[in-house]
Image 1 (cartoon, rainbow, N blue to C red):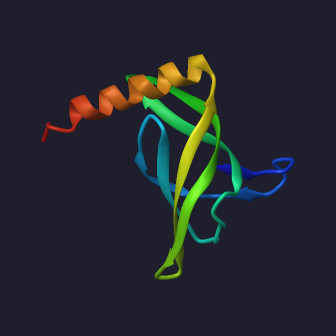
Image 2: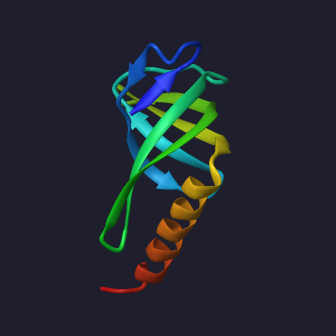
Length: 100
């Protein structure tokens, strides 16, 4: 779930496509404008531990494609604890990428 600023009063449901340490790419049925500030809650599982990672950022770019909005988000603020969980998730994903 993604909350818009100001006031985090509007919400957007989006599906994450790509995730990196500094950002993510998402798709949504709703359009969103570049430079929109966001509060995001990402549910990430590392091993058997699922945690809701909270972070803030902004929309770097967005484009409507086939009735859906694809947009990239730059992560600007994340707590140290959530950053550690995100990093562990990314390591786990990279380690599993070569397995079939």
